[in-house]
Length: 100
Image (cartoon, rainbow, N blue to C red):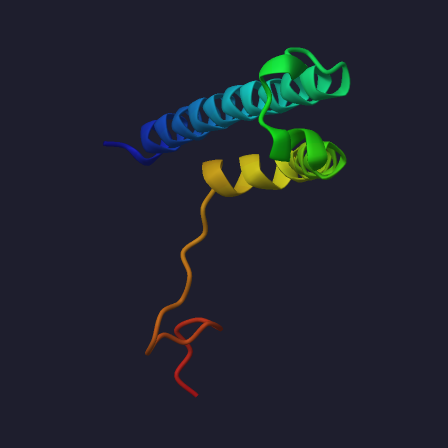
């Protein structure tokens, strides 16, 4: 396969991975926000367990923190999943193949 075709296919694959990760992140963030809104407006409070009612503020805080972290770190998550870098393992020189 010529080098140009390989680069085009590689670029398309990375683009597809990035779109998939974006879609999954948006679904996860939407689910967490919906859960947070249900807790804030106390939807279905009659069926909640007692421990959940006692620790409602902490639960809301943890979910809100997770949402904020996901929103702020989403560009990093997308980039690392679509463009992974090979890590140097034991016995490999991280600076390259130089033999000084």
